[in-house]
Image 1 (tube, helix red, strand yellow):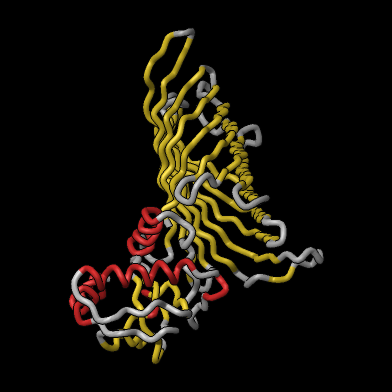
Image 2: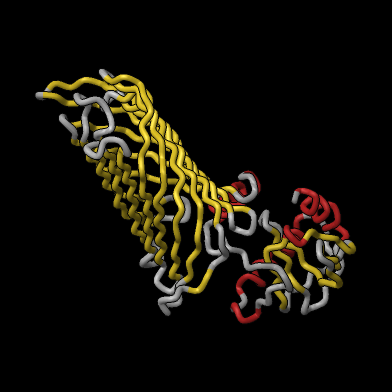
Length: 364
């Protein structure tokens, strides 16, 4: 709000007395203005100040504090500015009981954060496209296949809900750099990278759970589309696409969410020593999360696929993780994953275990 700062700076030398009992207006950019609310419509406030009436957009207002804001007498130069600061500090020092949140103005969600962190949060709020949430993740992982491997993992993920929260889209773009040890000899192995996407369309609104446990459920249709290249396992290209039909359950009192759905899928495989071809599968996708306290969350997911024409071939991806909300701008996560895949060439690596410690930065 550089405009408001300019107005205040220009008119401070001409400031006149403000009656005791005036209000203090807090703006998202950190500015504070002393005066009186004399009107309000759906989009703005009319705020009477010593220099006149200002029309301030409602979405720029954090809160309005009512109380005895110290008077600002006629002054000039820095003296007036010091009195404005003193008035603001005095209003902030008042007990919480003197604060009244203006109509339709939500409390500042970042009020308790340090100033630099508040600026960062509002920067994200003003920069990230509406409705989107992104996350950057970087970490170190230990793998055990036919050899031991240390990988440095990076990913960028995002999600968006729209249409009255009936449509959900998630993606995860990842890259791993791997150092492999075989018989105490180290060699660098690259690459492993890919993109996982999920689009879910809820077919029903939230319905009260029939189990009498204060939960709700939805019926959904979900499309899963994944691409990966994994030279550690000899996979040049692999594409999975599946369509599942399932149900999701949510239990707000306990912080638990669960979903599961079966359906048909198809895979395209191009691997070392293996002819490129398509495989028809039946799959089951399952996800579980539990926010069991304010700062910790348990995550678990499972994906199982069965070759429809060869029952000896199947694929399994399992993940179990613990996420700690360390600060308001960073999470720390420890995840274990297990993969078993025989829908590949006969000499390819079929089993992979990973233990990943990562630092995650939510961008919303």
